[in-house]
Image: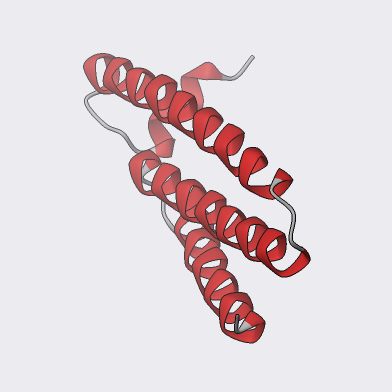
Length: 99
């Protein structure tokens, strides 16, 4: 297995996800960036498990995928409510949640 290639792939995916979270104001794009970062972490964990011959990493990836699915379900539900009340999914529409 080419570990350097996997490291480059995960670094690129994590960087794209980080740019999606930091550079955009759209909550949906931010959630997609978080999902990209979680995917990069999952790929890295599976690669590390293969290199070291451990199946524990694949089990951990399974649990991370379950948490990510729950995060998407809750996040999309909140986005639908935000759009119904504010007619926008921009982070500027979330300022009413302060205090």
